[in-house]
Length: 152
Image (cartoon, rainbow, N blue to C red; front, side):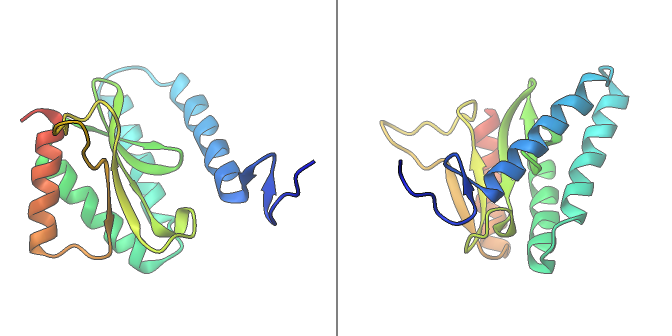
């Protein structure tokens, strides 16, 4: 049998297992929610709570700023959590998400786009972006990406 790395169980790291548990809890809590404004408000609050709980001040500040940029760029996206991370859905499917560096103990925060994002560019294109800080140039680029992803 292959030796497991420290912190791994059945091939998953402790951080990955925690994210899966967060996702299971998200699905359980969403089950009881009715559709409409109340559900949207509850999911937005879940997202804001997830950002507020980030252990790193830099991660928290960056996630708050990314939330503002994404929601301003595409107000039609529905904020929610996805594996405990801030995410934004279009027609019920997660289009993009913010993976804070502290989530999986990585070097940088990532803004990722799922396959519903309309970012296609030939036979290969980037679907996730490392973000260390969010200045004017990065904000402009992210706005363009999000608007393109939703098809605007």
